[in-house]
Image (cartoon, rainbow, N blue to C red; front, side, top):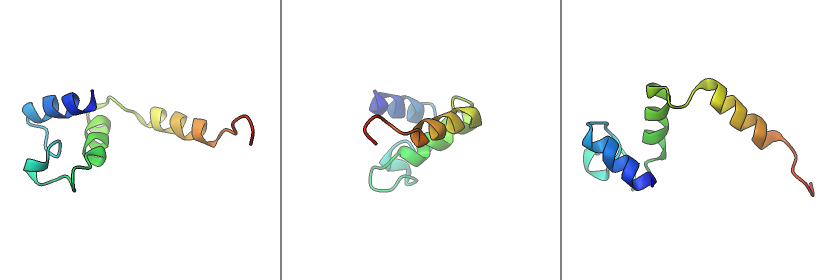
Length: 62
């Protein structure tokens, strides 16, 4: 699913989604996807804060 998303975004001219555009490093496209997600509004500051809060919550057995 992530690969097809990257290919689709690359096809629409979004840079950094494939190794051929020179922006990504050794096939790690996470930063390019993160930047695009935030810039396009698909991910908001509230989403990031919520994810950070969930990671900070103790889990059963800790």
